Image (tube, rainbow, N blue to C red; front, side, top):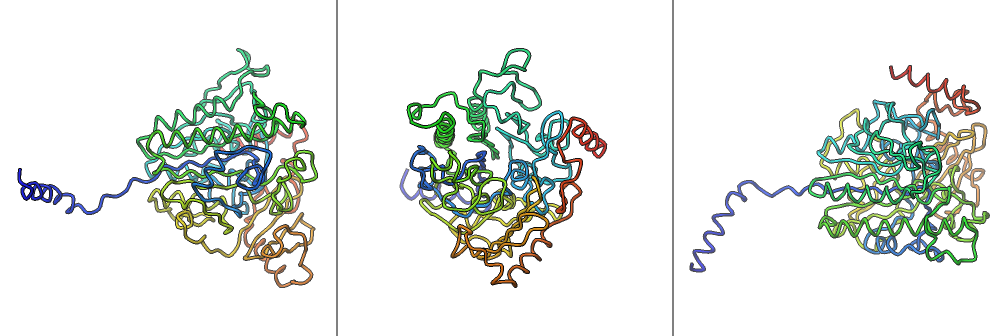
Length: 474
């Protein structure tokens, strides 16, 4: 065949494609890896010297590392709920840890819109692997009722304190790990099964858009590990050795996950976001914090507070060819931005009743600027209810219903060492208005005191809570 005839046939064969217009790219897979309690200072890429995290360090080199990524709030259930619903903790239905019998936390309500429901509507396969903590299976908070096609791991946060558990769940099925009775201490290290399920699920759904919420329990206490590895002979306490080994185990599992994506040929079409669910778990004065020296990475505060050391967490984005490699950004974003980000990536337009408090980070992830907003807001209902907000360079903290509003200049004082409230009363008043505006009243989460039904003083109180929730759902 002559060169002219070959060229003519090639051009002729392309006419139908040209008439159809450009081919729409497939939406990316999305994996959000949520580590339970890892802090910025635990990772080498944030300055840690004693704990080895080569895979996460490489992830940061090949992607973007964030210095001002904010969690939903600073304990497990409300932080996860903010991530899942796209609502900050002034609007989110879960604003504190609140256990209900027989196991689990206060459930997400049926009317909640979740990131899994949004992506499922956009044609994604969805899974949650690891720890759920947002409602037991016979409640509205069941993960399989909140948009997930598959669940594997711990439903209950308290059960997740053990890394050698009595049982895990595969969807609704309880998998006994400690013999037939399921009561004695297990011999199986849970992360082995959780990692295996996550990798197998990715392999199974490699050819279709998928969303995996990989909610690791590592390195949350208890600090248990099946192999101390390189730390076995360190001159540290057993808890310190175990904690370091937990972080390194998490790192090796992240390495396997990214290697799997490359092996399957889908890395370039998969956004992986890695994050902690709150800032540091340890005071820098504690044995753990003082040894590793980077517990809060120079920031004030830790878990269950609302200072920056509690709110900022380790966060890395990795998407080869799309997320800029080697970028380090101090521009702020928060958990409630993830749902609208996922919706934009999936090409899904959120309806009026699916509005969130967040803003899409797609342009930011790709190398642009972070979205502008009026403020960030947090509240937490553990002991006394506390509030905080960030607006521009200013950060305000109110440590209780009757506490004064503290004010800090994060640009010059990221460690929140100098309270400027007396010098800037107009900024204090602005913060008070933000706190008032951002809080939607909720009978479960009043800003005045802890309601009686949330006081976990007796089995009778638990039963009353359970009955109240059942009646409300009937």
